[in-house]
Length: 258
Ligand SMILES: Nc1ncnc2c1ncn2[C@@H]1O[C@H](COP(=O)(O)OP(=O)(O)OP(=O)(O)O)[C@@H](O)[C@H]1O
Ligand SMILES: [Mg+2]
Image (cartoon, rainbow, N blue to C red):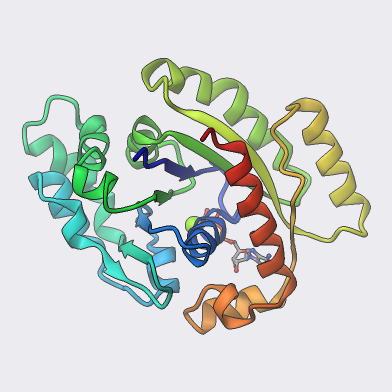
């Protein structure tokens, strides 16, 4: 079966990438899909959220040494949701892979993710990425099939998303024709405010068709969930951010070709 590789990216820091990657993954798993989260961020945020503080050494060694990624996957608190942990050691990925003699280091991740043990063992691979267009983000976007762009509901959010959609993704699609921008998800909204209304209207005008109609509301339960090392859907299943991420996940599935 076709196993989508979903990259959650935005080059702006603090735009809810990690929160979105975790919750799209957790809700797809809740719905019965087998999901593997890959933490490709040296900050290791998704790994810390799920209490898998490995530092990224195993992930680095597997990428540099041609090891099988499937063997690094660990179960999480959620049934059907597995994680390959990342962390600070991933900062050395480019150098270590180059040392291994691979002539195109940026393609190593794509080659590793093509492994049938992953593509047949999971229904979705979800990649959490750092906030720069460095080696790890480029490698991920050369491997991915689908891109979700979370933006934090703030005044600068439109510029970052527009740059990604108009300047960066079209260039990457020349090298990875399977890559498809699925949509832009506005997070941490305060729906009654003018800022949120102006931002969503601005995205719809500037980047037509990409805005998810679901938005994720600001919710203190999300911060608590991080402290409890759980997805919010387990920590407070009926809270508003859990409901919003469920709507966003349904919309994501509707936007994917069958
Ligand atoms: N719905 C929400 N309600 C309240 N806080 C939220 C919500 N979503 C995310 N946050 C908070 O916003 C902050 C940034 O989120 P997150 O870490 O997901 O962003 P990021 O894009 O991954 O950041 P980085 O660029 O550093 O990787 C975190 O403190 C997170 O707890
Ligand atoms: Mg992050």
